Structure formats: C-alpha cells, structure tokens
Image (cartoon, rainbow, N blue to C red):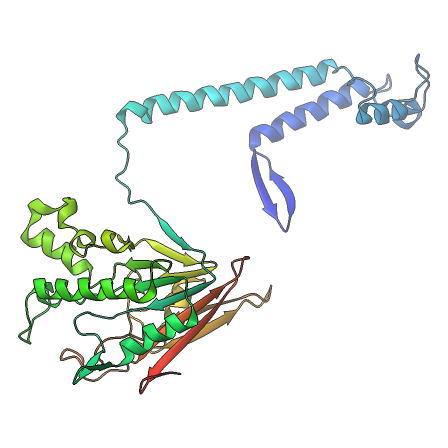
Length: 368
C-alpha cells in the first residue's frame, strides 16, 4: 500500500486490488445484514438490543476497544475477505522473490568501488583559519633580518586570540615546479619547495604550542603532487612514502592531514577549500558558494573576502556564506591584475553547535 504524507496528515492511495477487496467485503456485509424483505434496516434498533451478557452492541464495542473484552469473531464474509487478502499478499511476496532470483542474484553482483565520505569535526570553542599561503610565495618580507608582512600578522592575531585549533585550509604549498601550467619564471626545484614547507610547518607547531590542534587540508595546489605522480611515476601510486603528508613529515609535528576532498565542520559551519565545487567564485564568491551549498559555508581558494546571507521566508531561519582572503603574494606573474586581498578568520563555537565567524581583512600590517 503506497503511503502519502501531506502537512503532517497521513493519507493512503489504494491499489486496484485493495479497492476490489474492500468492495467485496462491503457487498458481503450488506448481504449478510439484509432482512427478509431485502432491505438493510433496523441496524440502530439492533444495536440497542440486550444480549445474553446484558450488554448492548455499543457497550460491547466500547469494552472491546478498551481491551476489556476479546475481539468479536469474524463473520463468514469477513473471514473470506481476510483469507483473500492474505493469499494476495503471499502471492505478491512470492512473485518478488522469483523476480529477484531471476535478475538480482547476489552472487552475480559486484560491489562498487566507492570513495568514503569522511568528515573531520572541529569542536573547539575558538578556531583559527588561514588559507592559500602558497609556500614559498607567502606574504612574509625580510628587511635586514626584520620579518614582517600579512602572514606574520595573521598568525600573531590567531595566537593572541587564543585559538585551540588551527585549520590550514588548503594551498599552503604552491607546488610551482610540478604544475601542469607553463612555468614562465625560473624558480628553484620542488625539493626546495618541500624544504620551505617543512620549515614553515615546524614553525607553526612551535609558535602555537603542542596544545593547539593543527589540521592541514589538501587544496588544489597540493593535488598537483597526485597528478604529477600519476603522470610521471605511476608505479609509485599507493606507496605511503610517496604521499605528500609523508614528504612533509606531518606526523612528526603532530599535524593532521585531510585529503581526498574530505569535509570539515566547525559546529554547524562547513569549511571547504573551494575547489571541491564546480565553477569559479564569480563577483561575490560568498554568494556563489552559499547558493551551491544551501548551508553555512566558509571557503578559501578565491583569495577574496566576501560575505552573503540568505533568510528563508517561511521559518525565518538564515544561512550564510563566507570567502576569505589569502596570505600569499598579491602580484603573481600569472595574475598581475586581480581583486585579491589578505585575510584571516576566527570561528567561535558554543556547545549547541551555533557559531560566529569573524572574517577579517589585513591591510598595511593590521587586522581590520
């Protein structure tokens, strides 16, 4: 029997076989109750007639409904109708089993090779997010031994804020030398990039201390390593020693790795790098990703600080999108004209999963 639900009320749509059974049951009941003159009459009078136990039909009905009397025995017509329904049900079940034996034999099936949909959950009350560092092209400058710049400003802001979890939200490495794009500028080799990344990760661990959870999420630039291995060294695929987390020595620094485009949440907020979604960010990336996700979402990837909120008109609830700024060079050779900005994010979380996002811009060495 197909069940339909609408506005909290249950309604049923009968099949042709069920309708026929009900019609037959009704005809049988009418026939059994007809009087000698062929009419259905005197039902109200009969209901008030006293029986051997001193109860009327109405009193007996109420007691049976309460469970104080056993159910009334079926009439011949009702028993016949019940037997038909059972026979029909058993026939339908038998037909289904026969169909499955013909077309759905378990021994003939091959299970799908499915990618697990894993989610990394962050429950800290204070979380910091940095994105698109693009080591070794991060925005950190050295003037006669004096280091300064947006990268240092961002991590100082997060440490002063007292974060308990740091999320490196993708593209921490640039992987310039193994990119499939044209390498116009003469840069050092990939080993040098690895050395820079290892040094920066070791610094982050020392800078924030062992009590801060650090999560490194794979971005589209880190995925360049997977594509490079697949194209140039296929035999190395699957070897743990050839994976980027092993090359970066993340385990020795107590840094977690989130790869394969897995998901990450901070309470009711989803955090993606941004490349997981089809299409670019557009004029207002926050609106673009909010419309795609249909939920609260924060992304990097587009190197631009934007915000967009939507209110559902019926229940009054809201959900929003955020895109955050980068911490890399704002004037690369491949995009000398852009709308990028430097930025950093903090997320406050309460015990109910509700959150507050502070999506800040960094200008002239200050978090604004």
